[in-house]
Image (cartoon, rainbow, N blue to C red; front, side, top):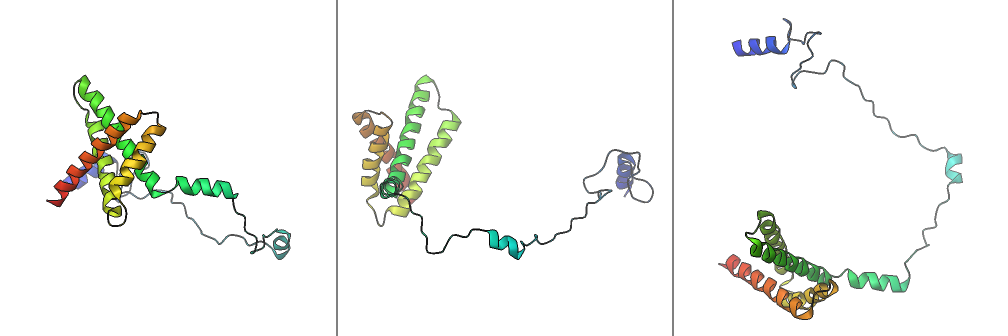
Length: 176
């Protein structure tokens, strides 16, 4: 208890246990001197005359995008395109890691990003393996994503193959 009395004296507590008015130092456990009281009220409701002025859309009216726009959006938002983008990102991280390795040593940030990306691909594989041909989707859409980023066809083939080799090593390690 002596340590508590010494601390209170250091912090600026008076004999009654409160903070002395002249002391600017406070403990985070002391109550605030002026507590704000908040009263919660329900929001004001509009009057019936204001409700009559509001323009409501009939429930039967449906606004849909043009047919060509809907078709383009649907084809770009498929899981195959997502898997292809993930493979392309893993390939880009692999290229970055190779460049760092040729300059000296691989940085921990690149190693972590590569591991996280391969873990994300492994999760996708676990999700899709029972229904889809995951390796075929990776090869086809990964190459398309890399080609869209101006990578040559032979380089895109090799990068996708290397990403799949790493992914298969992870699958084998997880199975054991």
